[in-house]
Structures are given as structure tokens and as C-alpha cells.
Image (cartoon, rainbow, N blue to C red; front, side, top):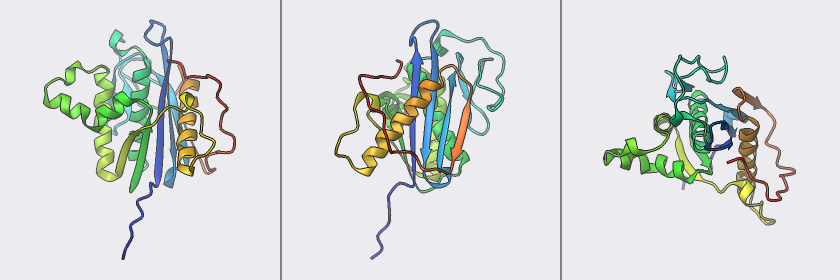
Length: 231
């Protein structure tokens, strides 16, 4: 009999970070790690603009104010930032998911894909919660509706061309890697840890994309001593 191999060919880890979360001088960053297939080891990171976001024609999340990342991203139109668009940890988490989905589309991902986020809120919303809110006419009550709309649209496109599953993953900085673990558990731990590092390093920075042929380094995961990402 034929036995189909359903093992994921591509893994995506996303994370967001924000310093002074909820305050006027807040600054955010996002990080994305994609491992496997034609993506090899791809890292995407950048700052979170103090503005609303929209989807460019190719699906790229683009800031609508002058605080857009860099010339590497689509140019931004002039618009005044609003309080609702101030960088927060939740907006950083959503932007990371948007860039992860966008990369999968641009990289022509196919087959089995696992996308991980440590944000339960947005994993639940993207996995049906938003559709239920919309059916009830309550989608306007959701925070960060601009980025959520972009993420929903991109996720739907990704699911049309891949067997994509979006899953919540407990943050690595909240739980050390168990002494006894499976290869998948180690990949999940190191993947989330790497996305977290990218996000924290990208707070207030320009957009950055790096693809390498080298495998993800699992040799010496960070030893944690009460360390946590900026919230």
C-alpha cells in the first residue's frame, strides 16, 4: 500500500517584541525564521512602524506613514500616525505573521507547512476566530484591525497553495528546553528562540532579509536564567 509522507517540509517561526509597550515612546520589532525546502534558512526582521498597515499588490505588509521600514520595502504614502497604530507587542506579533505568510507566497511554498507563533490571541483569531467575529458583525471591535486584515488575507492565500497549519507554541524564553527532548521539540525551541532574538534585535530597525545555505545551528541553545523578551 502507498504510505504518504505527511512530515512538514517547511517550518516558520514568528515572534514580536516591544520596548515600553503601551507607552508613547514604544518601539517594536518582528522576527521570522523559515527553515526547510527552497527557503534553506531564511531570516526576516525589522521594526514596527508607528502607523497603520495595508497590503501592497503583492501582499507585502506596507506602512501607510513615513515611518515605513526602508527602500527594501514598498514606499509609504504620507499619512499621520494614530494612537491606534502605535507599536505594541501584539502589533509586532501580527506583523511577524504577515511577513512569514508573505515570504511563503513569494517563495512559492508548496506541500506541508507548519507556522508557529507564541501569540494565542492571533493564532485563535486566524484559525477561525476572526471569521466568527465577522459573521457576527463584530470584527470592528477587534484591536489592530489593519494588520489583522492583512494577516487574514495572506493566510487564506497561503492555505490555497500549501497544506499550512498555524499552531501556538509556548515561548522559549518562558520554558527551557527539556533535558530529554525529541528532534522536533528542539527545532521548535530553537526556532522560537531565534525568532525572539531577531525581533528584539530589530526593535526600531530597518527591514532585513537573509537566506543562507547553512543548516540552523542547534549546537548550543541559550541557557535561560529568568530572561524574557521586552513586552
